Length: 293
Image 1: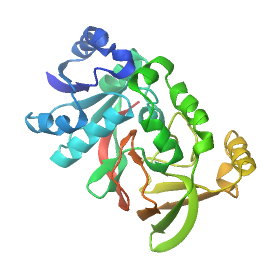
Image 2: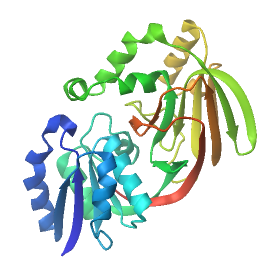
Image 3: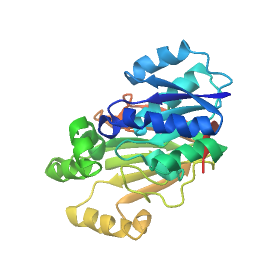
């Protein structure tokens, strides 16, 4: 019987995932798969825990939680050189990575991705010695996201981010951003930058509608310093997918980037606090196999 390692975040999804374990185990056993569950304490400890386990030869390694949980499992797998397909049980707040890959948030749906889906190659971004599967960002909304408590996320879901952001709008401050992308460079004043592997993040599904997680490219979107009227105009255009042409938006694709800011600001990798800038970034084409529908 093939084995599945199930690494789950006990506080994600309101802390109720443990109530689903029996159903999950039943579905997997019917498909001839044995579930080996592991309760995640934190992402730093996860690397040590996975290193002590013999996971090579497993059918799938599942990350059950939100985007931060997926980030932790992906980084542990990459640092340990584990070549096993990744599965995602999206039980967190935004679940951007799963959404970009078409993975259902329904229990039956995400289980069937493991039993019946295909393992497909997916790109990764590498920043210094860390990896991200969906997004690396810094600026206004990044700072807001880090101030939202787990209790608020469980209570309000994605609305917790939007509410916190609305309350902090008057505190928006721009920063100087220096960008190098595939040998070209420029400088601008910005409120926020998003370096994306997938189409969406933060619950916004079409930030870069043409982005693909298998194309060997990363997509950089910068929101420049602008007036409230300019920013509102860009927001309205985003509702119909026309924002990338707006005057306060810079959009470029590339394989290698260097990003620096003045002053230094908070950063984020897949929903987790990121490393300080400057960043040297490269895309790892088809860096990991992921089970998808």
